[in-house]
Image (cartoon, rainbow, N blue to C red; front, side, top):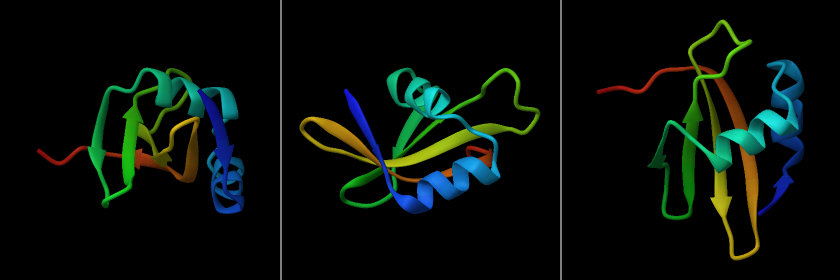
Length: 79
């Protein structure tokens, strides 16, 4: 599935040293997913090479693509 990045997401990826390939890996095979709002979900995954907690990608899943809104690091799932 194609991935479209918002300007904000690209800025956060650069700041947090997260590549487009890593974002696609998170979207394709997340450790977990939970809703953020009616249309947005947070997909998260622990990635090797990142010393922080999980990386989370907030995205809208559309018919033909994902629209990535933002990327977060040091992400922890509250249980």
